[in-house]
Image 1 (cartoon, rainbow, N blue to C red):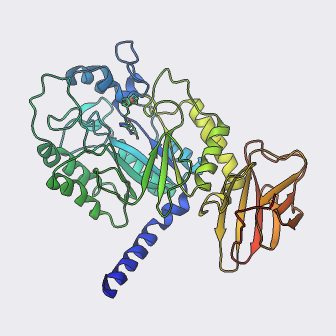
Image 2: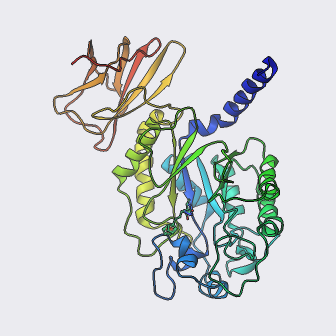
Image 3: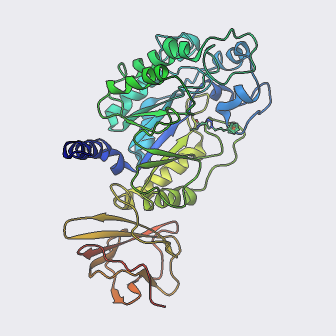
Length: 430
Ligand code: H79
């Protein structure tokens, strides 16, 4: 490459760094799956056709006309309050919120000017809940983003995925894009204030024209961050992992794990699979220790509120974050391999580094070994209460002396500040 091209590359890299800065700092966001499927809690005529409620139309092969009667006509979440909702995300320590503006069922949760199949024109509720949330996020300092299913649309005759409704007179995918998807995306990116994230889902092959008209709207919001799910070859700004945490974080890439707090993305009446508070907090720590973000999904009901199981868990995460969030926000991946007792995150500065040791299994002998750490320790203390801790250095690494009791049964944070550039031996003496 010519020197000029190399220069250009560096500048692009810097532009990306500037754009990604808030997202990398944030670490923790709220994902929200809310749609007309929430009205019945994923139930269709007394049956539960799927383990993820937003898929009910597909799994029960519900014709468009019946879906309207059973779900659209029943969607009336009168208890919904955007301020309270966003307040809860904030209380949990989440820094951004991404919500389903349109899922695969094709129903727009905003006042679409391209299709009457939307929350204002087609439900008894008649409120543009996306606008309400956008405003509440703006007021409360939470970055706001849209999820939009750009390929699957089980309502539009050109959308992908609906092979069961035989009344559909099919048109091409490109027609669907021109008539519905592209204009809706454009509307979402012009009429809802600053949009921080655009979250595509289920990429499929499509024409270059279709791709371009879907993609071009994202230029309407400078600095918008997109995931890697627009098209088959598209990389976007970050990778996505769905429902699982990778064993190792991808190197040199931004990435995010999205995961429902329970079993289903959309509200499902019979959902018993709420993850424990311990699992949720440790997931957040685990992901941060690998350098990723956690996008934790909640599922508003047909009333527009969250189940107590969800609020309880978010509040508990917030309690933990109130004490420990310094170890999460703005942290980078652990410099260690596997640690027997838990996870580590770090922050690097000009003269030294801070290691945040997240202890899951509190050592019975009160000795916490930081394996292979060769740096001089400047300071060590418990995050909760700033109690100073003694350390000693040896060939095997640094040993921190801990009090008998763990301050937090789920994850206690031990802060270790070291001098100089991190120096860690990966091969340890026996
Ligand atoms: O929006 C959420 C999912 O609905 C969506 N992506 C996340 C963020 C998604 N679309 N497709 N897939 C995920 C992958 C396919 C999952 C399926 Fe199933 C397995 C479809 C049918 C079997 C999960 C289980 C959904 C229904 C049953």
